Image (cartoon, rainbow, N blue to C red; front, side, top):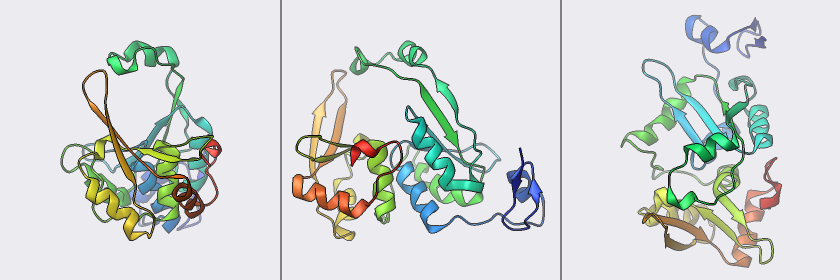
Length: 228
């Protein structure tokens, strides 16, 4: 399968190799694509940092339709390779944590972007050894939309938005500032002790505030319409 390089307009079988080894420079992502990278990385995304190679964005989820949506968004920056990452049985067999006992499991799928120098910017989120959201995230509608799609929920009856963010539980002021700077209502924080002793964290809003957030985010993303 070949693609058309947006810079030289020539058909190429391996665009990443073409950009890396020729005088044709890597194209830059659009503002929307950059916002999607940020929102995805705040939730289910991961930057694959390989030694001596350019980073890639990788997403693993049970929602194949959402990955197909990402494939469309990233266009030439996507590998267009959505594959089964782990079957439901493999997920069950690989889980040893007590908090997942009795859970239902589904097949998981994976999507990756091409290797891109521009993704080095997001690879810095891992400079401490684990993924940490930076202080200067601008919570645009697209960023918040993809964070909500990955780690958010909407209560069907009272229409309350909740976002799960246990990895950021010690960074309340920073997270609150994202919403304050976007002129959005600041969230209520809730923490809960899991059966294995670890702490989970989530943020939520009341009904009217939730409606404000949903209106700000705009149209739902494919595969996650039920969260709107």
